[in-house]
Length: 184
Image (cartoon, rainbow, N blue to C red):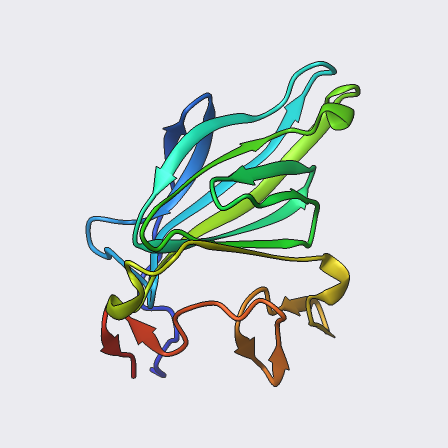
């Protein structure tokens, strides 16, 4: 029999993040991290009636980065660095907490006026040890600026960093690097 590229299938578990539920893939009892990824949450598709939306209240992050990517809907990001940004499908928000940042993610008022759907993912990325106490920062890239490759039955989007000969305008923070150790 030939070797397989799939080492383990991790079933997502439902977790509450304030008023919303997510499907959490990482961490998992048999796999705490995958590369630099500490947490991986998938949310939606969730349908909201007019007048309602997702409201993730202010909460802190420390010593890591988050990458938010939407498949459907819109969110409004505000954080203690002064960053204010809408995120729409295909856009990327990269927030580096470093020494500490507090942020909110909410459905924009204009989107709440009608029924809408929200779906996306958020990953939490370990910073190299020497950057864990760095100054917080925020980067946003519009969907039109994210490099994509279309192939038979697939689309590859490089949301952060580099891959498949493409380079995202969002640099990321952990190229070949995981918690202070060079990755293989």
